[in-house]
Length: 172
Image (cartoon, rainbow, N blue to C red; front, side):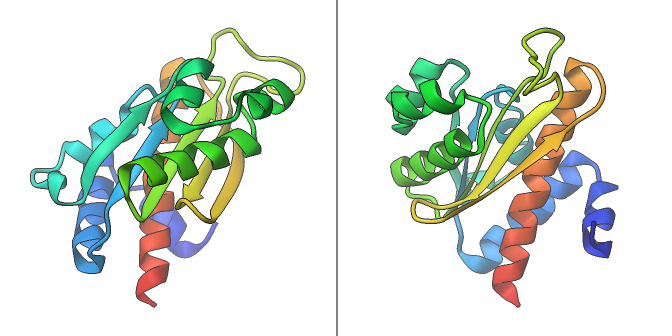
């Protein structure tokens, strides 16, 4: 992890959300999120900042596969072939969220928060993230320790940090 990444990882969610807001305003960027296992935690963190409606209009909680298909346009074939917790699905989720919302940057999250639902290939704590827009996405898989609450909280933090890092990279 970079020095900046370590610094961001030590900030609380409100501070991260405030930093995200400042960057969005400076860049004139709108952000969105497509969440599964975090159940709206990213949208909640972003909207905890007064004035966040300037850069955050729409977030999606697509907990069930049918919602991922219906709201975000995730092809049923991707879900059947790779499962909801996969690179392919989170990339399709963030692309669909950006397409539908018109946001220039988004994050998608799908994982196994536990305590059940894990498998040998995707144990509890496996979380896929994708950041990007309607055209291009970058995905990462993380294995997060702890109970359900801990996995979800860490996932929200990683999602926000990823948005911040991508906006900061645009400023360079």
